[in-house]
Length: 304
Image (cartoon, rainbow, N blue to C red):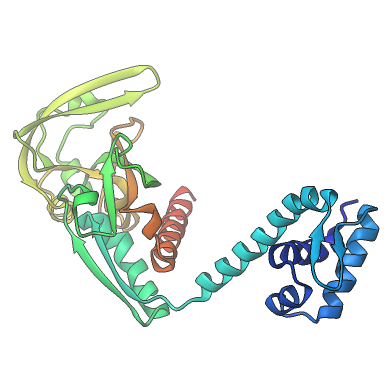
């Protein structure tokens, strides 16, 4: 069985070695000098040897004591780290967090988390930029950047948040005017609502088991905003190519349905980029933890 009751005497011994004084060690640990002496004597009894040579003038460390100190130092260092962690955890969050997030993802996920964060941290300030622009966080004024990409970002201080599936969605009324859409090959002649790109045509990828198909389609309406695409789809203007989370509420309300749900389309990933690992304050850590919890809760709800 592990001698857990050795931990405190080990930490006391390490402090005595560092200060070479029972009095100073007692003072720094908030203990009495007699308690320090008692812990050292107890530890020497348990290890079966003398750790310190005590005279009226000074303290000398034995060979056994020097070797044993290396292990005790680790214990004391862990105690210091745990105290620092608790202090930072309960320390009042202050200062400004500058954050860049994509418009739609930021509106649906980030803003609710920031609302809760500000309620809990009354002296914190948030500077949120909702934009789909791409930036180099190292050269920017942002503390945090939420990035959407298919591949991991090159930035080294990165945390994965979630995967985003894409699909085709349309209003039931619009689909009733069409012949049944049974496979991707039935899609080219329909009207499409797409995110803004270089061209008005786009090649949509489809996967099912070992099958892979790319279908070129034309768009009647394009926009750089997913919410605008949803509104057009709800109006029955065509089939919208969207991230599934954007269409989630409309699907639950029966206002949109998934087209060809048996086929898998694009998948993107959401990443949280930290400007500098050494500047991850308690506020930034708390916000990132809350954001992950909200995303996990949403994914769990969707899977059920």
